[in-house]
Amino acid sequence: MSANGKMKRIHNIQDRNRKIGVPILLLIVFVALAFNVSAFTALSISPTDFQSNDPNLNGRAFLLSVVEDGSSQYAVGTIKAADISAKGFSAQNDLKIETKVNEQSCNYGLVQSNDFEILRFSNTKTNAWDWDVTNTMNQCKNNPNYYYTFATGGVLTKDVYCITYQHMGVPGIIQTPSTIFNADIIVTAKGETKKGTIGSETDRSVNIGNVAFAKWTGNLVSGEQCPILASEGFRVIHDITGNWRLINSASYENYRTRTIAFDSAINEVIYNKVSDASINNMLSALALNNGAADDAAKAVAYAKPVSFTSNDLNNGQMKLTLNKLIQFPLITMHVNADWLGVVIPVGEPKIVDISSSIFQEGTEGKIDMTIKNNGNVQASFSVSASCDAPFQMIRASTTLSGMNPGEIRATSLPITVTTNDNIERTCTVTVQDLEDGSKRDSKTVTVKATPLAVCSPGQTLCDGQTAKICNSQGSAYQQDTTDPTRCASDDGAKKIECEKQGGHIVVTTTNPPWYEFWASSTSKTECRIPRTPIIAVIFIIAGIALLIFMAYTGMFGNIPVWVLFLLLEAVGWIWFGLGRAGV
Picture: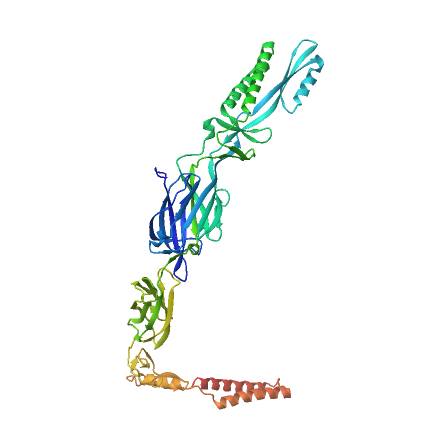
């Protein structure tokens, strides 16, 4: 907070859809709060980007800076419609914001300490017969609040002293405080008032009717702090009723001194000598201890209202209510601009014409468009396109800036393709307003391309011994099936012709006689076509028939017949194999 007591507040204005334009959402970041009624003064409005988890708030935003006078529990301010309209927007209603802190307090944690417990002591003196002294002392020790016992006196009787205690309270530690608050937020527009309550320990965010959403995001520190009670002479005890209470630190320190003195007096009786002087000194110290204990356990008041919200021994809570704000809650608020009647005029894009000329692979094609602004304000449009594969956009989008109402402007987007055939596909073009993506127009266009020409249709060539011919598009050579042997050598032609008949080429080499030692070997190429020799089949069938005859006549033991069967089958299968090999 500055020296003049002014607190800066920031307001965001964000877009939404509406027929007459784009209604916007107002994001208000403000600091609560002020003693005197004060008004907001608009300083500036500038565009910015705003992101939120609320899907209705994402998108284009505008930053509105304002100041507000004041320094305490209540503040009220009005953002005039003219303040927004003057910045190029169209607002119909003023927005009144009231904030009221119902409570701001300091919260202190309380825990048990290891310091001296506050005890009040009592002494009972009993005159007992000598034989009954031990029993009397045991009765004292059986007391649940027993502290110490001893006996002194004559031969037949003795005085038995029984010292017991009473709990007055367990001392505690006051921990570092935290600041808590609770505030009402009231918004008014077009005669309607909505209210919500927000707090640092209750609901940290709240829906205000159905027109606004407020959220506590932290505090701005004024420079003042919650009181540190220990430094102001206070501490706490957990008393015999089970409740925390605020006591005086000086009184407790006096009790600490007195209880140490009392313990010293008892030690003198125990370890030194039981005498009338030591007993009187102990009884005097006991009385002084009790007086100090009564003072130390006495509850005291603080200058500001104090209440104990939890009396748990190790998790107590004490609340101190403040009369003056020492921290200023920082709150963000989202206001529905439909309620305010705030709009941003936008353009209305229209695709008047769209076309694309056929192009060849390897060159750059185009989608040509004519765009018109049918809106009543100057606007900027984004133009983008997507195409079916294999067409691709070289540049996916372009921007048409500053189009006046009614203006018509031509633009284009480049495309490319990779293909081996004549091809035809569809592209979709979308034009939308940069301020409001819902204002858009889309159209489709047919794009055509031809493959890159590498030959003339029907042109032939030889790739080694493979015959090839140019396809009908002129984009590539393919195997020529109409005349496959035109590129082959004599042997190659024979091989192709032989394979067409289902055969294979066999090369045989003949060596000259030994006496023609000067002659060279000769080679012969022939096509061997697989065939099925009829005589071989007859031999095989005859063998099978002979086997059936032996089985029918019982001649399995006739060896000559078996020899004949094996001879028929061997000749038949050998002859059949040679025939299938083309020999």
